[in-house]
Image (cartoon, rainbow, N blue to C red):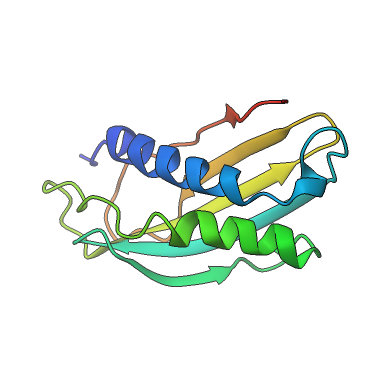
Length: 131
């Protein structure tokens, strides 16, 4: 039986989303709404610290300011709370996707990747606002 990471990931996603939103470049906000997508992979160690953060393959938006905002949203959230005690693994590997479109800034997904133990798959979709 796997570990239910939904409550833990809700805390992680909320923290990263709040930090990311404050770092999004002005040209990706209303009224300009520059398009871009960034994918960042990282691990959360048992004690909640971040390790091994990197852009996912093909994960750069091509805009360094947008890439830095995604990177900073995760980095500013370090450390997260410790991993759930019922999880026997040493780390949780995640890939976060950050998306800005011509209509809004959206937190696209947080997805568990490369786990050593069986866990529940979780995906989140959250709009961050159009204002």
